[in-house]
Amino acid sequence: MDRPETYAESMKGKTGVKRIAAALKYSADGIRAACQEQGFRQLLWIHAVLMLCLFFAGFTLPVKMVLILVSALSIVIELVNTGIEAAVDHTSQEMHVLAKKAKDVGSAAQYVTLAVVALLWLVAWVGS
Image 1 (spheres, rainbow, N blue to C red):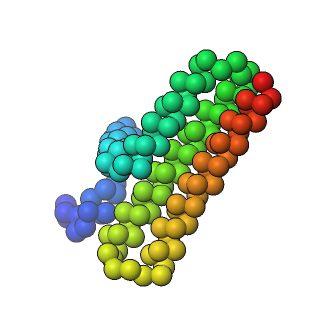
Image 2: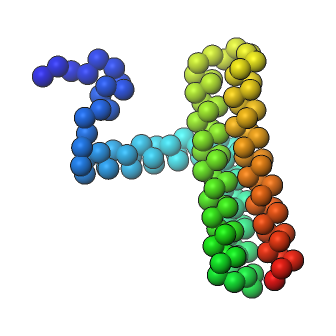
């Protein structure tokens, strides 16, 4: 049997439970990598505080569900943004207009999401 020529090829061919186990390992690796970024850790703290506030807030279940969902979305967007930044930095450390654009758009996605988080929390407080 031929050995894979590249790392990408070595990842192909897993099926069933092995594929699921590998995917979970890669996801855990991604979380660990993201946690090395100060911005990601700060975001986790912000959302942890918000989730703690959720326990003491007198919101209805649907409102709590929406607030949990938007917090999760913010974390997911930050994971994608961190991946974009890593891919761009891997491609080149030099300043390039397209590299800046990619990083700026990823950052903008996170700030839009955080604005929605703030807006939804405001609406939840005012509406309760």
